[in-house]
Length: 349
Ligand SMILES: [Zn+2]
Image (cartoon, rainbow, N blue to C red; front, side):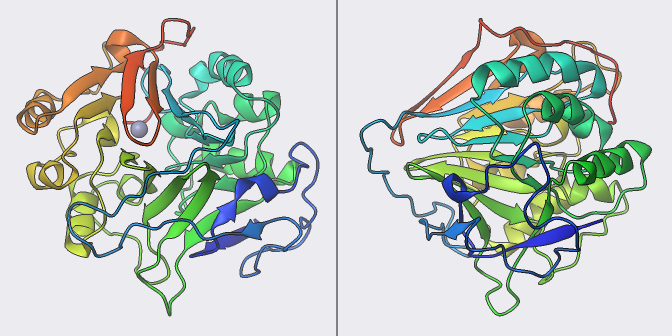
């Protein structure tokens, strides 16, 4: 399967990414692993990068607002038991993180189509489980994407194989975040324009191997990414649990974020006390289905989030949630206009 590395410090300015989302990519047709993206397709630009081993409070810079730039918006969709969130940058770039379970796909595709002009700039699959990837083909058939990023963690499920085949058939290049071995402290960062960027904190291959936890290693090696916009940050945890949290803490990763997209739908195995002490979330967004069979979110996790001072917002209770940032302040509110899908009992725990 053609798959390319997204090298550290190749800070992708999504405006420059090639426009052929629904047709074959210009450089498809041969294995792309190890090649630098073509200059005519991607223009590298340096964006502010949080210090990789810095203190709990990462350096932040206030974005310079230009004429025509809007706020940074994140839609945390109501996809039932699963995850899907759409980032819309101040300059209109779009990044979808996960695509919910299969039964949410049609509604999610309609919702994304209503929010995005043209194909998505990037799809990030946090990890290859069905409750995160199941709706992606519906979205990609309807909207398309220019790039696709996943952890590169091999998973034998039929659904993941089918998704990779779907992407290959359409010439959509699958990339994995990879650090430059000579610069292990410089994370992979995707510049989104208008002072917003998305920094991948985990995985850190090839500098470090995937985590081997004894629980779900697909969950443990979820892409953990920190979205920053001036003084505002949102931390996306995928389905990472305590082993990943502990490792990120040991690394001194810049975790502080006003908004935490809670790991693993609020599982009791995620959102540990030391981790929350570092993140210092003011709002905790939990994406889960009503009456889901996994008992998400766990009472213990809700208690830990409350003790950490975070206000919990749950998609199973309020539906879609909308986050808006101007780089200094943020708001987070239910999105009453959304028409989400609310399947409750499906997906991979
Ligand atoms: Zn999940």
